[in-house]
Every structure is written in structure tokens, then in C-alpha cells.
Image (cartoon, rainbow, N blue to C red):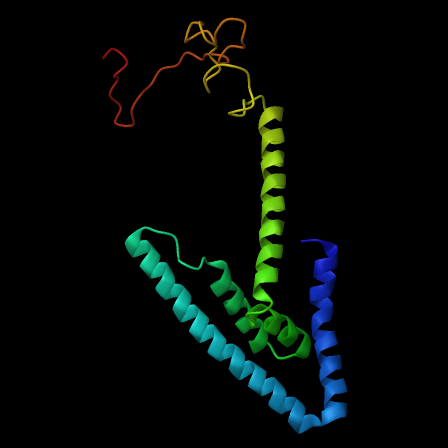
Length: 185
């Protein structure tokens, strides 16, 4: 987790308490508590509703073998928004309301899809580099031949003509756990 995110999470309770004090000074303590309690009740209601719908859609998708109709991102955003509304505070309530408001969800869905796509591309590039550093062939990125390193027209056990071999062959003896020697079979 980046350092900035850790610092933001550590500062969040202090910011929330400061905002509660400021809002309490503006509208009074009873009204501030009433707003916070009502936001918590709204969060619990949204969590129950979104959770029930998400489980029902997932169950229906598993029964039919098809992906969920509306996707899983909307129910997850509703549930995350509900959790943020349950947490007492105005910053988390604002973020929770952004996640549960139907007007803002398409923009957030678009932003999340772009972020996830970039992240997956970076992970794929890192994995390709790691495999290549270990000497492995990455399917679809080598020369002609099959995934086992054999080239067209080459001997299946020799790695093909002009290609690298399949690696070092180690002779061994296989002995099953029951102690019987089946190497002569």
C-alpha cells in the first residue's frame, strides 16, 4: 500500500472528529448526532438491500451458468457505500453517498474499469518479465513452434532444428510410497 494511502487512513479519524466538532458548532450537537445516526441507519438499510440482491443475483447466475445480469460492480459499490455510511463521520458519509447515488455510479464504474485494466496490463507485463528472466517461454511471444519449444521439422525430444533444447534431462528411479519397485514394469 502506498505511503500516501496509509497516511490518509491514519489521518481519517482525526479529520472526522474535527469535522464533527465543526458541524456541531454550526448546527448544534443534537442535530449533528441526528444526522450521523440517520446516515448510519441509511447505511445499514443499503447494506441489507444490496447484500440480499447481490446474493440473489449470484445464486441465479450459478443456477443458470450465466454471468449476473447487471454485473457485480454495482452491488459491490452499493455495499461499499453502505459500509462507508455506517462508519460515523462526514468524510466517509460523503464517499459512501458518492458510491450509492445512481448519478455518480456510471462515472465511478468507468474510472474503476480503467484502473483495473491498467493494473491488469502492468501485472501481465511484470509476469512476462519474470518468466522471461527465468528462461521460460511466454506463449504467443516466441518464434514458430509449439509451447514445448519444438520447432517445425525438429525431433520432438531434441527441441527442434536450431532451437534450444527442452532443458537438462535427469535420469532417475521412481519408487512408489508402498515400497514396491515398478521400474521394471
